[in-house]
Image 1 (cartoon, rainbow, N blue to C red):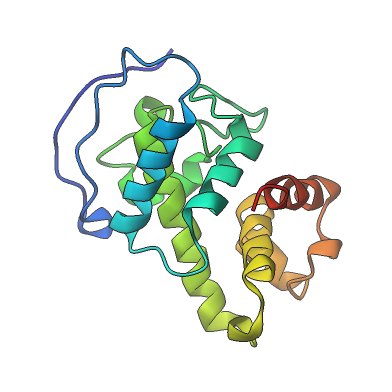
Image 2 (cartoon, rainbow, N blue to C red):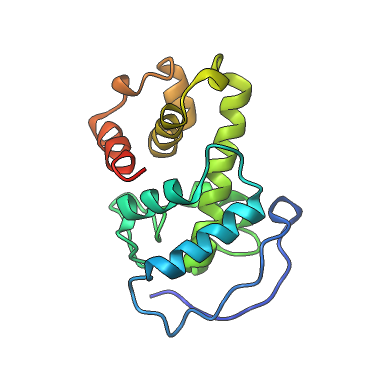
Length: 178
């Protein structure tokens, strides 16, 4: 079981702007879509998330990854509503240890949105023709990179069809909603 507590501390400069945690101790295992929507809206604003990251996309990721279950855990160790791995947690690990905060819905969503935003910025720099892709194509690439890894997707020429079945299925699940 993980600790849930209300704390107020400052984030590192990398995560500047994230607010203090809410007391989540009275929340049920499944977070309501309205509460998740508020967390997502706040996280997108705070992360200054670039296009095409938007509320509906993040909510579809949460739905596909965890069905809004704050305590979701995969066989490979991904945790929380956005199913984040410890490696993804990087920028906040010192201040907010993964083991302690990965199941906090607000923090999990904030870290997930920042990670997706980081991927967009990487694609903007390295994917020739990124600006000419449709929003759907961009979101599919972001979903694939989140699942299989940016480097692996790049090594296959950004071809989602060359990714493992699990990644292709993940992209389809997320794409159903937006």
